[in-house]
Amino acid sequence: MTGPAAGAVSGPAAGAMTGTSLVRPDRITLTGVEAIGRHGVFEHEKRDGQPFIVDAVLYTDIRPAAATDDLTRTLHYGEVAQEITALITGEPFDLIETLAQKIADAILARFSPAAVEITVHKPKAPIPVPFGDVTITIYRER
Image (cartoon, rainbow, N blue to C red):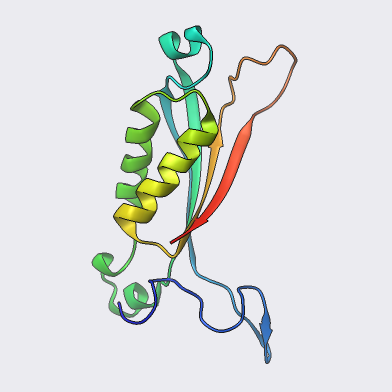
């Protein structure tokens, strides 16, 4: 890839109108990557583990891959899913904020998208009232 970081939007900010077209970066979205992790502040969370679900949006320019039909010219979402799973099941953290940051850092370093948006779901969080889900969402750029 040439020029600025792959997927970088040049000119007006993403979402800005230019003439008659809307400038928006391409996205690869991976949702529902699930694994058992041992993240949490309570001892039983680290001991017993619980499901964590991650959604990842990878901002990148897919035109080189589309033009050549070549997997090596895009971000391999299967490998991204494996990286996310390894981080969920790996070193335990007290906070899902930390897990989200580690996932974003790893994806930015290994796969080089222009930016990522990571959402970590903790649907079995130890909350003493009925709830549907707890999520942390972060957006990071290279």
